[in-house]
Length: 72
Image 1: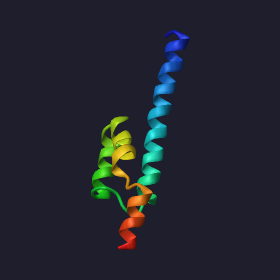
Image 2: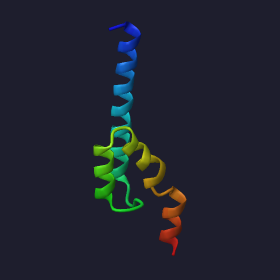
Image 3: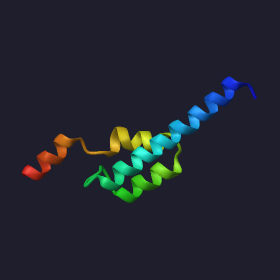
């Protein structure tokens, strides 16, 4: 295998691992999510790359929404 191909392969794996780690840490430390946490957990672990990206982009409550809900 060519060295550039090896580098791309390692970079792809590390990117996937980092996305998974960040999404899991955020999911377990966040109070509220859009939808049940167990569904997001399954999505993050079962759909590589896309699952963590979906959670990070859409599944988290923005900080402003959580503060507004607590104020009511």
